[in-house]
Length: 205
Ligand SMILES: Cc1cc2nc3c(=O)[nH]c(=O)nc-3n(C[C@H](O)[C@H](O)[C@H](O)COP(=O)(O)O)c2cc1C
Image (cartoon, rainbow, N blue to C red; front, side, top):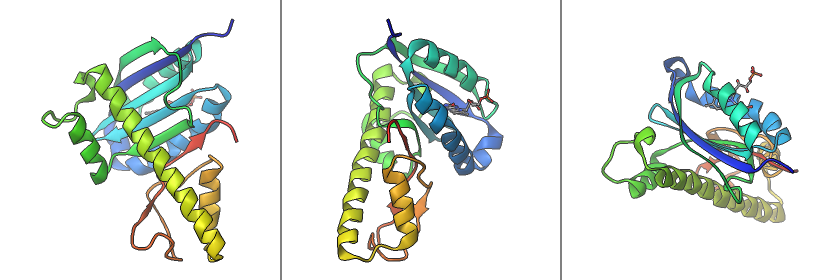
């Protein structure tokens, strides 16, 4: 019998050295984790905000537990504290073998809606609130990806897709490695809205 599907969520404090260049650290973590997570049937979402990491790991229970031990010993953060660890019926972060997100000003609205008064201290948040935070971030990204795909299709039809953007977008849509931050959009595809493509790795091709 295959091991049960397990979901573990933890919060940790980002190490100062990592916080200094968080964006590069996240790129490094995500790009290196995509292939091993995919091979191990792990789906994961990592959120960085105000000195905290919050990560969900889903997959076969022994794999999740071993991976958590490895991650917890990583010097880029400390005090990794499991907030939830339980077998689950279904994956909540299925599309991503590894995704990460630095919460932005726009995401503050998400946080405020979850817990308007309290400061962001995930280690003290109730399990369901943390779960909701992560699933909301995942959902926003999922919709954004759909929007980008539609925009790419429209632009393709119009026959003016700029090469760099096409490469990046194809890479992203194939579920490989996205680019952190704002994608250059010299062809003006996005109008005056920046294209935000913060991650992504997917299970499957
Ligand atoms: C916050 C954080 C999250 C991480 N998440 C993963 C992950 O999901 N999968 C993974 O393989 N490595 C992840 N890593 C990297 C691991 O800690 C570790 O560097 C990597 O597994 C290589 O381990 P090894 O040197 O023992 O082979 C993460 C690191 C940090 C700091």
